[in-house]
Image (cartoon, rainbow, N blue to C red; front, side, top):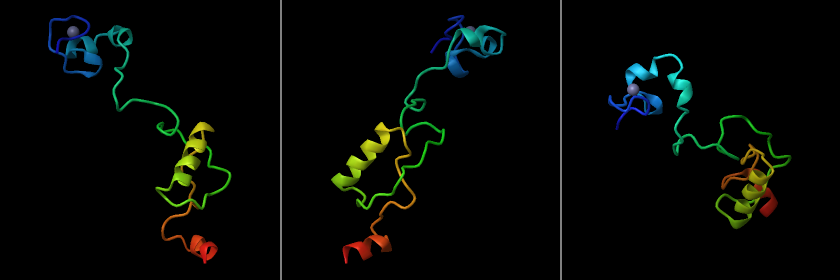
Length: 98
Ligand SMILES: [Zn+2]
């Protein structure tokens, strides 16, 4: 692939720039970062911490109820998982069931 800026040299630096253009002042600013499947940002995908859900769920992993809870949390911009969410081996959940 050719350099986005000079279109002569091979691009071997980020933003599809060649070495010389990448390190030339002002060139990098003209060419923004390239959108890749690794750079997507959205609810539940960023690296910034979100707020924990106000309460844990007893819905088991993989259940329709759990998926509904995850969807609701994503819509509210909360962390998808609460540390006290039920897991298959959650003792608290067994007490509730028994
Ligand atoms: Zn170049």
